[in-house]
Image 1 (cartoon, rainbow, N blue to C red):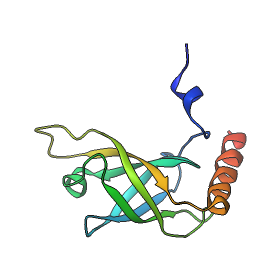
Image 2 (image 1 turned 180 degrees about the vertical axis):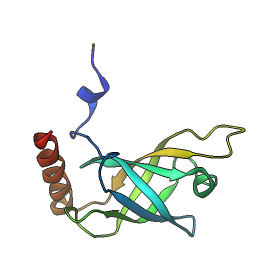
Image 3 (image 1 turned 180 degrees about the horizontal axis):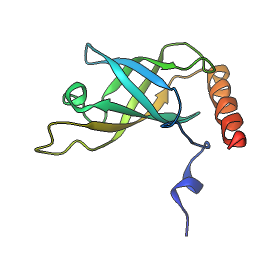
Length: 124
């Protein structure tokens, strides 16, 4: 049986315990209070307050995505929302986990992210 990790192209790092911020723009709105929940060279999980993510849907484009951590490249990325967890009818507080896939990322930036993930996973 194949696990989800086996299907991933890139290793994924959980970043919930670290100092990883994220900010981005979508649908003309700036989201500034996000946190990076996980990271891989192919995409990331964004933890965003429900109030700021209420207008977002799967398939939406994200622009000016900036990974806010001193060991990561500080360049604006683009991404597409692939999944959303925690956005349910009647929920009025808390966070939504938004899974995104990077789009048009340069091989150099992808490699910098992959190297960071590998180093952090090795550190354990």
